[in-house]
Length: 374
Image (cartoon, rainbow, N blue to C red; front, top):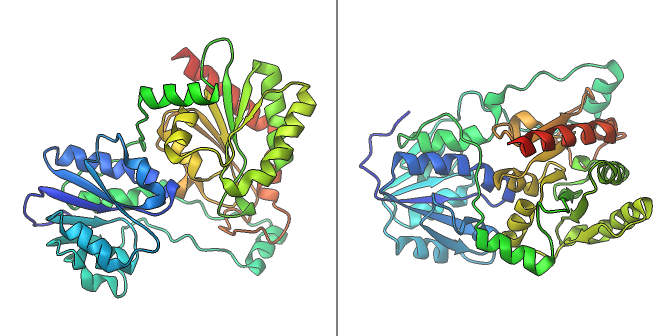
């Protein structure tokens, strides 16, 4: 559906509050820029992700709000911009209300209870969209005991398509582009100089991202990460960069110690909780390869162009994986209860424990070979 609305001159895009979702939305932002190259595009972003939008060619300005900030203060900041068109990627009432209070004439977002009142152009739920429904304990155990396979999830269910469908109402193309985050040469160089890390040369640097903020049901076992890291070091002579947020620090030390104990070498640089968002992007770009759980840095690593290998268990790659990128290899679980979308596994985490390090290493070496040829 394309709206019958005036030509947009200044578009506000209310962005998502989680890193992975925000990175996925860059596919739609690229299409929006292509559709309206002369329009000014301003992103309204939570402060924790504000730096993500620096240096992006599909964004002109960023308006930042904080968790503590009132909706009235946010709306006043947006009203001062005099935007004529607004798109709300989140499905929250607040995101629609912000645009209404800011006086934006054309306000686009998905129709939901209550928020529809604040949208000038509510969009019906997209055909092909599937909700991420958490399985109950009983359902998980029933599927496992009977060996019942979960129904296949079509790629049309991918969340990236939700954002594309909203920008398509302004005439943007509907075929998705791979998510993209630009990192400048200056940022990469500064990061490498500060932390002594860089791709290429006589030392190759690979990244490990063993955390997952959502919960332990998305985390490939620590021992598997260690085994895969040791195997890849023996095959390639690589050194490792360990990534994670402040909450992953306690888990990072044992991983680093185990890898160095098994290899007998000091080959780990632990950056857990030590980087800003832009530094994290530069760090991921500086690696030749990243092994990661399904989490925000997974999307960021793929979007900056680094080859990534991801063991998927409790979540669905068809809904949130980097399926539209050529630099990603997904290793999917075969457990009948997957995807369950649970934060904590109610049984034995078989969806991830069954993914052996050998499979991840093989995928990593194949992907690395493909990219080095190019």
